[in-house]
Length: 407
Ligand SMILES: *[C@@H]1O[C@H](CO)[C@@H](O)[C@H](O)[C@H]1NC(C)=O
Ligand SMILES: *[C@@H]1O[C@H](CO)[C@@H](O)[C@H](O)[C@H]1NC(C)=O
Ligand SMILES: *[C@@H]1O[C@H](CO)[C@@H](O)[C@H](O)[C@H]1NC(C)=O
Ligand SMILES: *[C@@H]1O[C@H](CO)[C@@H](O)[C@H](O)[C@H]1NC(C)=O
Image (cartoon, rainbow, N blue to C red; front, side, top):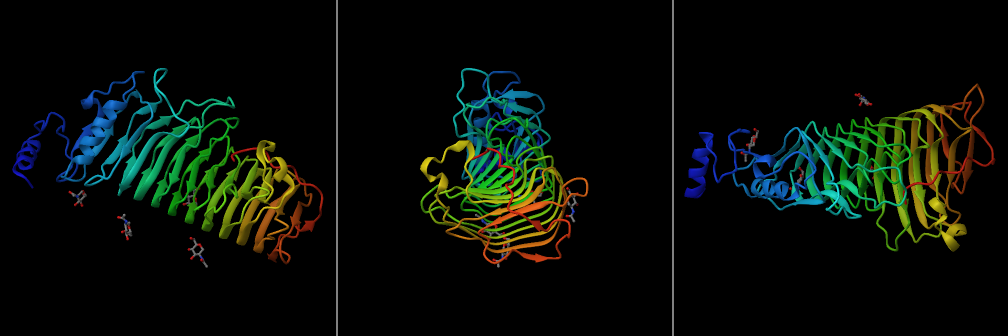
């Protein structure tokens, strides 16, 4: 420690302001609290971005460790902002207030509103709310509320998200990230407002969260490996999805997803894997959905390899997908379907699905009616272990078309 730091540190212990900024709330032996209001942030509609960044820089540069950036109670406007590392020790970022994008005069890109990038051991938490103030209109920019980009060994915990303009949380190019105890809410009619999206990331955990939006509660995109989703209560929305896959040439695979102990309620889809028609080669493998309760879900179990929202596929619409789906298990899936077709496995004629297992799927489709199911291009019959007798009346009747949603 340099002499200067020693002096600051000593002063700090006496709760004297050091460098004009660190104020005297101790957070462990060496931590400091960097309250954004001490950097000029004020509640209201003025863009507080510069104050937030100044507090972040000071905390990120702190060598003492255990620094905390604090957004206290109050409603703060902030424009698109990036909190980037590397930091000596990543601060804890506590949001106790409400954040809103500033009104007029500041630009929210199509990209993300609040980004944390190039950081290790970050914790973003608090009792606060990130309010994207998105609406249900269709052609607005799809701005992600909170993006983690290039983040490792980090956690987002306990925050509330409402009305994003795009995805609420996006985990991108990151590793060992946990999202825990989040509450995410947007109108059922808001477009592309996925709850949590994972892409190009590994070892991601999504735990004990309540998510209801106008799109997928959780979506797992290309380049995702070892993703575990547990204790999620999903609805309204489009369910828990893998994909969509097969948009890009050379797309990275999805490998190793477990969705366990979740409840899906009042959604258009339940558990779904979706790939575009006419797509280049790709892969999705080792995917397990187990111990899932469905309530009033229109399409509880779906593999859709000709997924084409908004009819945007042109000439590709009738071409098969080249995304290979393999080793997919649906185990102990119980509850109710609001349509007559509980299971739709519509795989690619060029790449039939391999190793699909349905084990203990027990769904009801209303008034003692047997549920229907629809299979196409599933190599071998799906392995049916302990099927519920009511379910397995395979027919080739058309299932309800999948609704439009995220690309
Ligand atoms: C930060 O605080 C934790 C718990 O209070 C403590 O174990 C750790 O050593 C501290 N780290 C630093 C760098 O002071
Ligand atoms: C993250 O944690 C893992 C396991 O604890 C460790 O092996 C890895 O080096 C850490 N990564 C970084 C970037 O610190
Ligand atoms: C299952 O998820 C619920 C939240 O929906 C949680 O309260 C419960 O502890 C979880 N059970 C297990 C066995 O993980
Ligand atoms: C499948 O994925 C899960 C979750 O990532 C992982 O724990 C398991 O080891 C994988 N199994 C195989 C055979 O790769």
